[in-house]
Image (cartoon, rainbow, N blue to C red; front, side):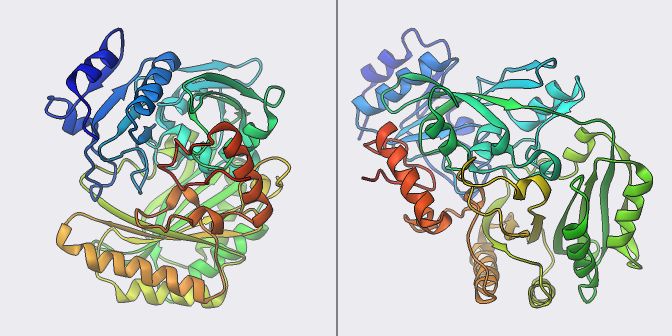
Length: 451
């Protein structure tokens, strides 16, 4: 549907944020995706300053029968925050982070990212499990689950969500807590962006002081380092979270980048690191005392020129057949940025159940993802084929499930049904029917309204 100029002008009137339309100088920058494969052209991009303006944008979209995309940090690989010929509600003007150090609580605007959140909380020696790319938005990561370096002690990000301000499908502002709407809060802990627009998120914080960790790169070899890593991460104390990225590096060849965070003494951290590294020669990097923000910054920021195609699976264990498959898949591919990310589900992240949140994959010990990352459009077919092949091999080894935050742009419309156990999916559909019966918020891993 084409939106008339008079309608856009009416939305803009009294709007203290920005209303951006095609042809304006800011349009192309505002519609740019984290994933360069995504090239969508919204009819209107609204950048509200508060929840009232978010509600106005929702009602505008509904009045004109336009689809809605909700953009927080904008780190969605599938581009869920952007819609063609619709209204993008871009929250990036709403980034304020307020910390109450005495109560160990923080409230943050829905457009804040983890660099901003960590910067505010670490002033007080506090933190919560956050995204490992610091430019990731807090909202999207939280609503999908939230795997990060503090999960062993703190649980997933969503486990620490204690409240939210939500603009619903009618444009109304709701205060969601365990006292006001326990069911909706449960759904926000891992149900994705299906239930409204989170304009503020409230978190429980944890004391996080000096840590031990960093990044070390070793040769992949026959995969022995991955076998040691799997054993160590399973028996390790809650305070250890290590992640591996396996790739054919243009500079170092077939290699494993081990990113480690240990919330404990350097002496014990060194012992844990040695248990993983064994006799593998270090090609680059080192472990040592570090701040949480330094560890969070290991992955850096990926520029928006990169193209992305990701698929993930949860596995009960990083078994020998899976390690052998990882080694073979890396040896077969050309050098580049693409690789296989291995993340543990560890410690406190495994102890919460469905009475607390709807996040579906706590029984797995590891999350294995094929991350296709490249720059040239002419490489699209080869890179996508490699990630699909990897996902197929993982499935053939008897693993499954998915992480809604890592979904590819071409996932089937019913992907949510296979992401959640049957009773959990049914409960989510019932909540969806109550808060969004018309499925206004459907640019996500969609949970349709249910009976």
